[in-house]
Image 1 (tube, rainbow, N blue to C red):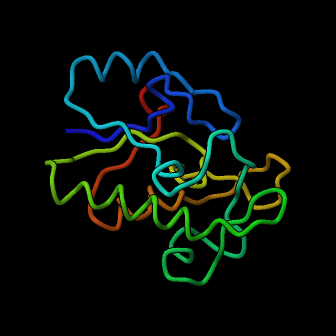
Image 2: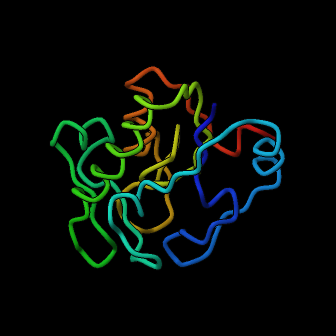
Length: 148
């Protein structure tokens, strides 16, 4: 069973109220048992919402309480991101999840590259909070960009 970012399946849960529908992901989901998740919505954030980025460290630092996630307007949304990650990770107790296909570059779901915390569109090495939490539990995480 795979976890999939809801926005990749066409659900309008992206920060701007849109989606990130991806045909390769949709095709895979037709063949594989899957669970759709949006950690940010599961954490209690609304759609639409102000964009957010990790500031002051890595996703691992956020999970350890040593970095934060702020919106572009300066609101601390760390607790919501942590709650969303926790809720996604809790699915591992109930389902035989082996892999996750998550949204690239997201502060929740990104793997390998995320935005740098300055809200200027610059990417740095790193993972999103939920992606990191899943990897910490041994789940293979890839992004939609790796399906192509």
